[in-house]
Length: 463
Ligand code: UGA
Image 1 (tube, rainbow, N blue to C red):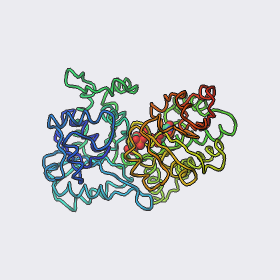
Image 2 (image 1 turned 180 degrees about the horizontal axis):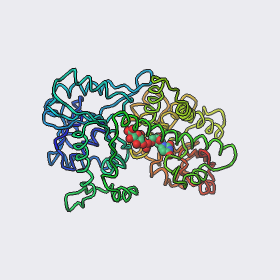
Image 3 (image 1 turned 45 degrees about the vertical axis):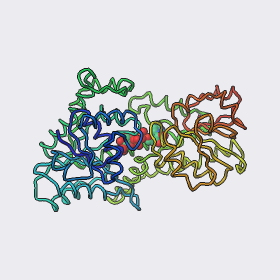
Image 4 (image 1 turned 60 degrees about the vertical axis):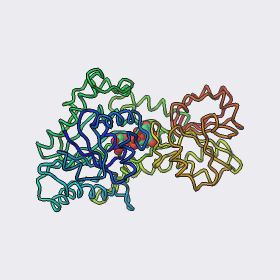
């Protein structure tokens, strides 16, 4: 099928690359010329495992064309997916300005019976605004659907190849069938062997979620729902997951006060299939480009509808307090006066597997510590460029080149982002480099007994 993807960010470029690899002809539209050039040369403008290989293949077999030109893209497509950002506006509501601008540009180039699909995360009720905007711009017939996306950074190629669910919110049978076909073709590609032209990357083989989705037939993963339900499913999913993490972090505080261990408690409750173990890992808190904005967005969306979403407000404030709890712990370890201390921070990205530092708990901690310590050394395997740019105004940040370098002459090493190379640290090496042996495990990933035996003082989050 000929498809336009509007917006070439994490969501848009990943979706475009996977759809093109599955055999669709994809036009990827963005308003930034430098991104377009980069994509057309086969290079993603952010790090995402498995993406570059797919994109390079798509460019060489000419299944993907990145363009600034809406008319080239839309007039050659049957279906357009809007995948642009919906950042927080000043009052915390999700801003749909870019969605409206994209819808207008699509409408200006619309062919009859075109299907407009909104993938971006939006407040419930957005469809009405977008549909009326398109009606005002064109007299051509069109179909509308909401098809929210659940891909997570760091696993977004896998999530797009083998999604756990495909939500299609539409009242048009025509649109439903076409969208079904678009993703069914992806499913076939994901499951076919490479020798038959299927996906030949490592991601599916290595992912422990694969088996489940391999075995669950595609049609059982598709849900046809109303447009409003589809819009709300996305905001609800992110808000619920964020609430789960905040719940674990709240229990971690009780553990710190009682000697209980949050990992043991979460293993205990997570074994109940009604609860599940996922997203119950205590730590520095949740961040990223999605949870913080979507949680606040749903709080504001509810307020506008006359409902005070107290549970979600509590989940948010629990998360907001995590940085303060962390600096308090650091003071417990090093003493109240940190002015002569050098602290090493392992990780800048908001989670492993990505170069994204948006609302990163690590960055929040660095920003809180910077005014009260002598210096902070930082290292991240993928997010150094973003970190350098974001932290450039803080005077006492040193950017290291390796894990070995970042721990040198340090009074405390903090695990802020649980990249594998930080989890599997060589603590004998670390011991030789540090000036005082203190560890703060902000992701509960290190073996407390082992590091204590080596002579470190260890603090975790509720362990
Ligand atoms: C999230 C959702 O997981 C995706 O399903 C959704 O599609 C996406 O937002 C989106 O709206 O686009 P993402 O922001 O990539 O994906 O990151 P997550 O893996 O959900 O992690 C969010 C934060 O929670 C990270 O800071 C992570 O370190 C933290 N986290 C996660 C915990 O602190 N504990 C956990 O147990 C799990």
